[in-house]
Image (tube, rainbow, N blue to C red):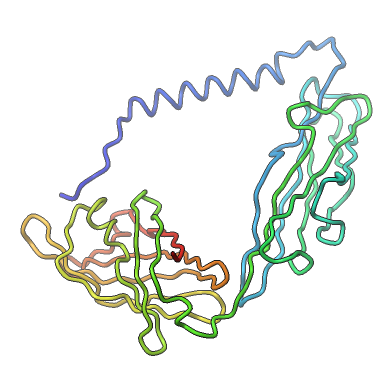
Length: 292
């Protein structure tokens, strides 16, 4: 039986219940527990802060699409509320870098929220620079909630550096997988491919509980569009309860030659028993790596 992560369910359930109660009380205090004879209300941005970055497809940065939302704190109103949005003078995202569906958001009579879409135009943004999109609001008859009266989204255009020499990606890479295991990989060039040693070894030993007795370098195909492919291939032999287990590995991912970052999703097939890790509910295993 493989090592399993033990969860103390009673504490988790208790924590969730307690958290749910606290959230319900906070929400009630903002909505249900207001003075129904009062006309005072507040407006605040929903998700007043956020962080976004462009995706890359064949080296081209894609636009970022998201929403700007506002919420009513206080009694629902008998008439529409119109919230006017304006770009703050401190915003480093300029008017040419985004498209807002409208400069106003309407919360209809009896409603509690509204939103508009916003698109950040990647080709108008500088590469490798974090920008801030900052909006202010105004609403007639009410006030902006002081805790969230201003919206501040950070946006980042991922840079693109074509991989003209595969040796640029050869070296030592450090990172961690989504199970919290620290990973160190070493890459080298083998003809037209990149090879990697160390992938998944920390997961096998620290999470899966199997010591590796032999392993091969993983052959990685680095595609020109910023993606990578690990075709299924024999990988390693482990030892568990005195018995050897053979594994193959398969995966996909992305690479960035400007930032020297790789993201890899992989699965392993226990070819001795004929089961992938995903058959146990473990994959894809995600690992984020940065060249040192």
